[in-house]
Amino acid sequence: MNARLARLWDSLDAMGLAALVLLAAAGAFHFLVVQPLEARSELAREYAARQVRKAEPAQAGGAEDKVAAVYRFLQKDEETTDWLAKLHGIGLATGVQLKSASYRTESAEGRIQRYEMVLPVSGTYVHVRDFLQRSLAEIPVMSIDQLTLKRESRNDGTVQAELRLTLHIVKS
Image (cartoon, rainbow, N blue to C red; front, top):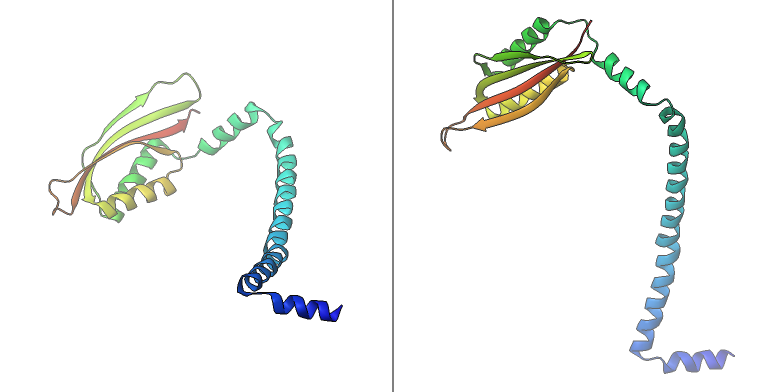
């Protein structure tokens, strides 16, 4: 038996040796990479199935619970004037120049009243972006409906922006 293996080994040329090395590498790759990935995939499937089972009772509450959650989120003690003052303070803090603004209240049939604003502002792009980020973070009842940016020339660092914002206020 030993003589046969020795004769087989001697008869292998470079191609046969390369084939054996590739075969060994494929086996090592399967045991070291493929099997652990398959195990992780199975764990991920089990985790996802558990998460779906956990979420099903919460979804059973229905649309009424979701609507009530939205009303609770939008229910704040601040008045519209408080939000506007905060918006003005954020503009001052971020270096954005707030120009005259137009406001209007959108009549709504439901409990949420929309207070729409058009704010022309100017400042650098970074200042306007910072103003919007801070406004959204500090005024949770606000949404950005439209944003228009203009620059007089390529070399001008100042941006003229028109912001269309809405405050969503729950009626008392």
